[in-house]
Amino acid sequence: VTAWGDDSTGERDDAPTGAGFVAIACSDSWDKSHSVGLRNDGTVVTWGDNSEGQRDDAPTGAGFVAIACGGAHSVGLRNDGTVVTWGDNSTGERDDAPTSAGFVAIA
Image (tube, rainbow, N blue to C red; front, side, top):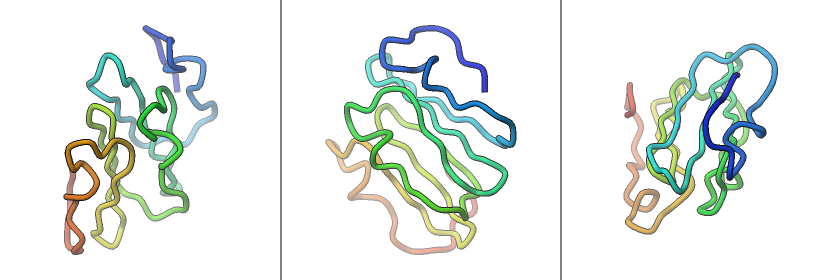
């Protein structure tokens, strides 16, 4: 992963090294900048700002097939069709996430 631009919260220096990434998602927030990477083994890697738990709350384990980022929260889609959210919850980003399975895409 190669990152550039602002590095005030680790957007560049904390970027992971190595190969095997199949997707990268970046937040759209100038003051909560974070990124998420999806490895080919189905695990999630996070870097950048952590002021709202964007990194500490990230899920562990494999089984992810898609990722997306919001302003200060992120979303992952597992291979069983369930959705996992982490990070900011100030306006229900996590509490309002669906609890059923059957999803095939996230954005």
